[in-house]
Length: 154
Image 1 (cartoon, one colour):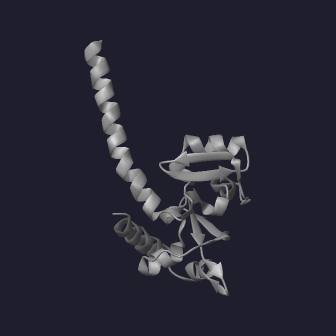
Image 2: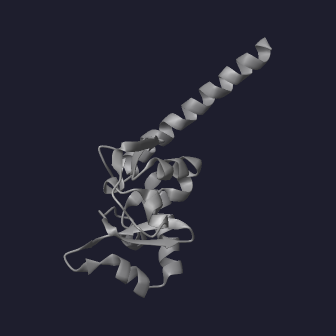
């Protein structure tokens, strides 16, 4: 029993050690304001086809990034599968990440779910990048964005 406990504590320590660099990397690379993502919009609400601003009353922090939810139900949905609901490319404009890897703010009302993942887009001053994404070759844009994002995250 004592050997099991020692092994368990060693494994737990290793898990924390591996998680710390990941948390720091995410905090450096995700689109947040004071580590709150998505301009306070509830990521689950996008999958319900009704994006809504969440509340700090229903806040949850996943690997250093805090998300707000409109209610406890959406919070629990997120907790069960955060990777599904976190936005692609750290919540930066997917089109711009595809074009040149740069990080550009998003409009919370400009979005698309692609292959089960939320993609957010810049849409200010007549520059609608979701429209540009939709007019382009989505498969090639997504591939370029995936490649550029991985290069930025390291």
